[in-house]
Length: 244
Image (cartoon, rainbow, N blue to C red; front, side, top):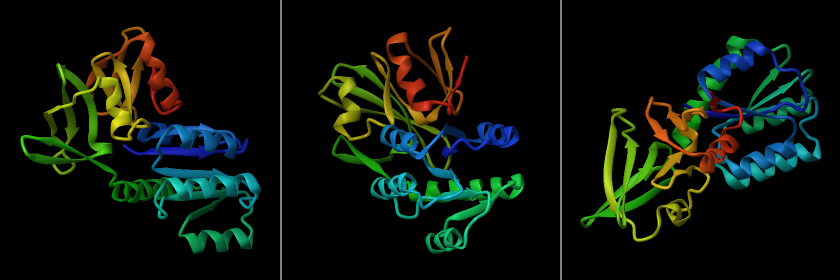
C-alpha cells in the first residue's frame, strides 16, 4: 500500500476522489505548502499531489526544493490546476510530472496515482543491514512490519518477503534498549514505539483501535499499544490511518 500527500491550497476536493484514495492508499491531506514541508519532515510519502493555480509561487517552489533534497529525483509528482498555464505545462513535461486540469477525470487520475505508486515502490530501495551468526541480512525499510524485544539484548524483526508476500521473523543481537533501535539505524520516521516491547512501521498501520489499545497493520496483524505511545501513530498517520 502506498502513501500519498495531497496539498490542496484550500481547493474543494471531490468527496468521491478522497474516498477512492482512502480506500486504496494511505492518503494525508494538508492545506498549503508550508504544512506540506512539516509533513515531509515528519513522514515519508510515495507520491505527491499539489493543487494550485500558480505552481511557481515561492512557497510551492520551496516545497519542491526541499522534496528534491530528501527524496529521489524521480519521486512521482502530480500537479492539478484549474487552467494550466503554458509555463506549467512545460515544467510538468520537463520533469515528467503528471498534470491535470479541473474538473478531474477520476478514472485517469486514479490511473496516474496507481502508476506513480508503482514507480515509487521501485524507487524506494532504502535498506539497513542486520548481522547474525556471521551472516548479513539486507532489509528494505518498507518491508519491515514490526520489531519486538524478544529477550535481553535481542530483537525479533518481522518483515514481508517482497516476492512471496510471506512473513519472515529473524532474531538479532541488539545491545541497546529497544527504543534506540530506530535512531541507531536512522529510521525514526518509519519505526515508532507502540509499547515497551514493540516497534511498528507507522506506514503499515491502517487502523488505530483507541478503545482496545491496538494497532492493525495492512496485513491484518494486530499489535498492542498504549495511551503513552498511541500518539506516535496518530501524528504520523493523520488521515492515513483509520481511528476506531
